[in-house]
View 1 (cartoon, rainbow, N blue to C red):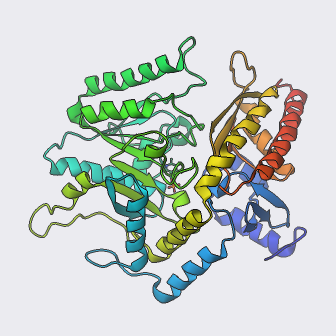
View 2 (cartoon, rainbow, N blue to C red; view 1 turned 180 degrees about the vertical axis):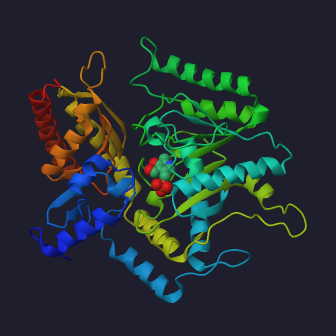
Length: 466
Ligand code: PLP
């Protein structure tokens, strides 16, 4: 591993190449044009290291994905073995490969009982995109071609292919981008912290369920194909819905022949202490579950759409003589990615990673909550290894700081100066660590955040924002 101690000519050259040629996703170019990138060159366990040799605790598991932690040699070896034995061959028609078949069976075993069929893609956006196509195809095949509309939610994040971006409900994500009109109707997100004044959580839940019922009445169940939801909304601010929300939403969908799609791209693979959260945590039985990210712990790109027996029966019936299910990707069921996922799941089971989340998760929740005394921390929320701080100007009114204060960036910057990477999203800071954090690591992280928040308050005051 390269452990440069300063800006060597090599690092400088790399930095320049990146700045000149790499269009970074979700990047503020007003900052990028000036500062360029931070090169991350090494990673091990709960740490990553930059090109200058500075080491950080990874508080975001790469991007909510490196669930088993960094530098797992046995995953690299499983991938190398597969790549040298048979790196790639088609899975179209009747061809297959061993890791794709093994993984499909393993996913069927881990998923709720009725989800026994797997459609592979290369990530979360593509999984959601493929899902919408399959759902439309399903209703077309049932002779219900008007059932097309998808219900999503404001502040949902489902990715950035054209279809996935259309499902996404974070308004700023689609600034100056187009989405597909008339495909999606966005319901309200379930945001307990900012629910209407004077409403109990249970009244709030009634209110959200009624909105779904009213929307169905307005659009017509005959025109609605599916409802898609993250069990806990991630990028939209780690929003935990009120108790029984998902169950009740699912019941309304079921009564109206509306499919229920759980986007478990973040919540799957241990983040909430189970391989899938839908049934284990929220007592729902989705018709479709999508996963990616933690499925391979980010060691290789992979997404999977888990499909019910009932849907599979329709999808697997040819349209007519010679008809094929004509959707899929060159890399559907890529052997190297599937080998990485199989090894990742083996590690999760062997090391009882889900149990660690169930054990340490409540401690992480409790210790992060202790940061609420800071002037700017309006809300600490989330569940287990999926947490968020919401920064505000005024705790009583929940008023936000002006956008120019860049409070999320400030907190993240101060944390990074102290050796911890967390993710700023507007006025929020997300903590979504590798699932191998211990209580000791949590203590270290909370101590860093405590200092970072104090420093943030000082800098906000110095700049006249507080
Ligand atoms: N769905 C959810 C809930 C996500 O959080 C993400 C990514 O963060 C996606 C879908 C998109 O996944 P990908 O970036 O792998 O396309």
